[in-house]
Image (cartoon, rainbow over all chains, first blue to last red; front, side, top):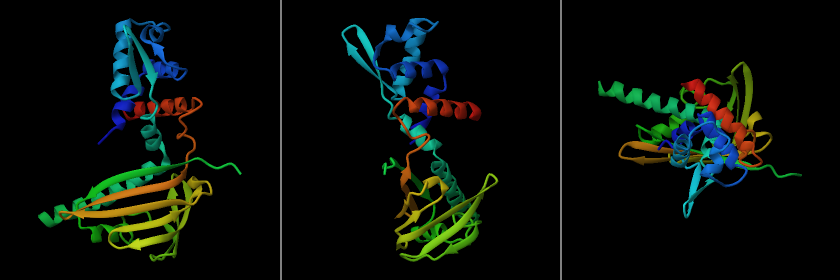
Length: 109
Length: 142
């Protein structure tokens, strides 16, 4: 299963990266997160939902307040994907898989 | 001496062939579908406690790799130590298992004891650096 794409999608937007940077300093209410941004609360909420869906933040409902907390664990998959050996082994396995897929196709003809 | 923080990479892939064939293809330098093929200065002795060495040419650089086979259990499992400039002097460990089911093989590859450097740090704000890097890479892919 591809867990990486939602995380990469989530961090591809500069506002969402700024939100993550803010939350790296500690949990914050939605209104506090929205404060430095020149955008509507609704737009900030949409960004928060994307980050939440990617598992990068956790929403703690405290009565009417929604406090957001950073969950950096999914970033681990990004760091692994960026690691030279993650890419190296993926390429090696691609070659092996392609080799046998092509062989199977030739046999099938 | 400061202990280096390490990490493990795990990958899985289903290969459409029986385990013995996949095992042999992965460990035969004459089959061009594995890390040992197409390399320079190859030394390769596939048995337990024997050694391998090769030079992999990538992006204009020669990258030396060497290690020792610590388990050779055809067609189920192979394990070898693995050293290269990327392991920063650490003896990393590659373990590959081959599980056959209905004529196909689930290959699981683990590369453990790798130094957790550059991108791997998720503390001291270090993650922000690779967030940026990931975003740049992602943007480049679009």
